[in-house]
Image 1 (cartoon, rainbow, N blue to C red):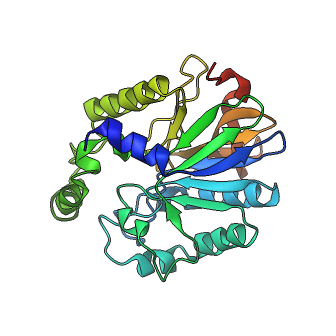
Image 2: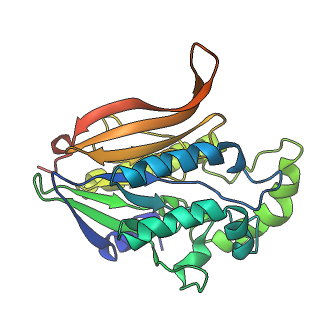
Length: 277
């Protein structure tokens, strides 16, 4: 199956959620929660992530995770990931109890597409947000659907990561198959996602490449970024009929005390700017 068909299939199978003027959503991708060892890229930003989620929970946002929430290529045992990051999964459960949680799976946590006894909530491949004001649609996916090696041949990629690239990462060798680490793969994936969105008049919101994008000159492609940047996490907020690209980072005050800062990198951009007509 080609990448166009994979994306269209995700579109056809997507659960529909309505957007209205009171909707408050936060979209986060690529947390890559691990098992607390040196390969757990989530560790360095875990405090930023938990602070951000706490803010969104108390501010009435619905949390949407767009895949690769858990690093299940390098790690076999999902239960161990849950135990190491118990505070995160506790907070996700609080969102779930309020009916404010939607989880997608990506290539690195593809096994969550099957029902899991360790999760009390389902994981979807895709969601479709429909703005009832502008009648425009936003297709939420992880983004690996546009990347053949990480979709059709994901089991081969998992094998290579688990037994080749993970050990070599200790010596600074980057995985050449990764859309986040290989520039040409990143460019190709993003181009395909934007092309598909323009052809089908549907804005695609994804992760996968770890490169955040929110620009009114690209009305058919948005990217949340990731939670494994060197010193920050990024996400997309939808509130007040607008989109925002937001960064959470550790900053210091004039008295040298530290605090977690929320910084708007782009926006607000009205939802109406992403119009299919």
